[in-house]
Length: 173
Image (cartoon, rainbow, N blue to C red):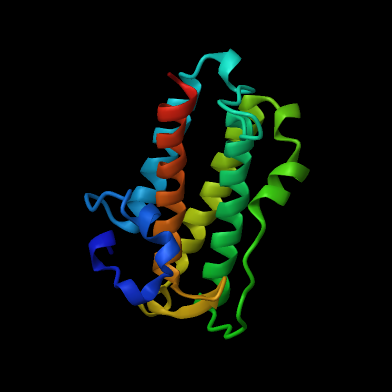
C-alpha cells in the first residue's frame, strides 16, 4: 500500500502537510523501515555542537525534536493499534510542548536518543506488519479528526520527514 492510495477522508486536514512529504516510491512498511535509517544517518552527520542549539528563543533543540518524534510515533502507533482492533473510543490530542518540557531530552546523549528511536520504530514496524488489509483501512477519531490506521503509519513517516527538513533549513545553516 502506497501513499497515493490514501483518501482525504482518512485523516484530518492538519496532517496533509506531513503526508505531502511522503514519497510514493515505497509501500508503507518499506518506507517505515527506510525512513528511520535515512534519519539516523542524517543525524549522525550533524556536528556535535548543534544538538543543543536553538535557532531562536523558545525553540526546541535537535535533541528535543528527536524525542518529540519518538513520543509522537508512540502516540500515533497506539492510535493505530486501537483503531485496528476496532476500538470506537474517540481519542484525545496531546500537548506536544508539555511533552517536550517534561522529557529532558537535552540531558541525554544523542546515541541514547537514536537507539530509542530505532527501538520505537522497530516496534511500529512489527505492529504495522501485523495488520491485515482490512485493519489498515479501519478508522477512528483522534484529536477530533477521522484517522485510518494506514494514514497514521504514513503520518509517522511524514512527521519525521517534516522535522528532518526543519533541521536542514533552520538548524544546520
